[in-house]
Length: 531
Ligand code: G4P
Image (cartoon, rainbow, N blue to C red; front, side, top):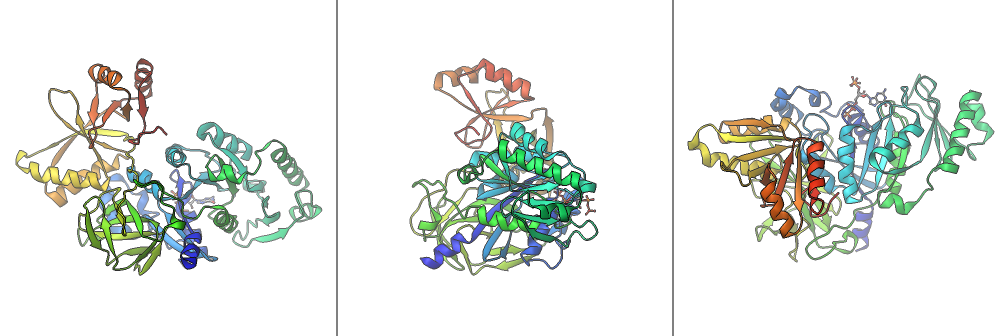
């Protein structure tokens, strides 16, 4: 048991959430570099590919192989086993991205200092908030002129509703960037613009230490820095482990990923503070990894076409408790069937490795001949299921029809498959004279993926007629209110499990409906509680 507990406690499984271009690829590379997983930054594939035009989707898939976009990367650092979950941030942004966050125990929110909180960060943040996981913030690109750090902290609170505690603080910015003061470890890290990778670190007794005047050399900069630290000490939030743990206070780190500045300090402090694998809800109550040696896990993502030569799919499983051993026999709870896992893989930079052993917190890839669905539970021994995986509101909708009626069977099969993978959501019109299937996706690229895959994998041509909705809400309420709503409200659909979902074109329409039906709850996801 001791070895098992040590293994679990050494694991940190987290996701980096950000808006495109904030520097996620760069930061991931630097982390992998420190972990010794890659020899030099710049070797992780995916950056350029991910910026291709929409029509290049298939090329992207072909080229990227196993890259930074491959869902989970693992490396070791200072006795920790780190698993980074990838959340695709570009045009391939999809519901998948949200779902991946359900496999993380904490998140790092990466923000461009010049841009602040951007749209995609906001959406991903909401999912982390819903789960109540700790959220760390890395404010990037300090080597360039960005916004005032206080203003950025205010924005976090205003737009995201999260308080923050700066773990370190920049001295100057852009042209005048001199370094950071580590409030936590009382250290100054000096920035050398000529050789940014070369970081000089000085221990100090506190922000008033005269040594700071000496090493920074710019009296104006130092006095501004001291005023700012004083303001933080007096008016800022107090450091609270409890608030960090429940995700209401975010520790902030400043740095510059491209110049390696502040990255190592971030990594080390993050590993110290971030939680080891946490408990998950299941049909038999919470499963606590530390106390449960029996293996269990759930599928949070299915990725098709990872190897374009075969039509293979990989199901990504988050181990929630116990030890996984290659070749072990587990129960596939939904199917009520035992199965042997003989070729589990893990991902290390560009390589796939066969896993012999893995522990709670780890992510393994399972070869999937079509046996898995998002949310499936695998267990050793006792049968139970993890809480349902939520669906999130799509942002684009289209009515889908098959061009040749004779191909209907293949069409149904293909659409079912893609729905199970979580690439698309399928809805059915409700109370309409003509029944119609409606596809909902989070990122518009998924429409192209859908058409392409139906054509190439199922030999079916479809017509997608875009419908101008952009919001879906799962509706809950008592029977009487629901009946009235169902009678009066237009644009209702049912999801795959028969739940009533209302579609809206914009926020105004949504608010009008909410005002009209104050006793109904409009949920942003298929969970039975609002986020
Ligand atoms: P993403 O995965 O979040 O989309 O971002 P990515 O790492 O690809 O970075 C986006 C751009 O921001 C890149 O520039 C990258 O070099 C730059 N960048 C990342 N971190 C920093 C930083 O700390 N400071 C500055 N000044 N820039 C940073 P690009 O011109 O789009 O690409 P490249 O030609 O540099 O590869």
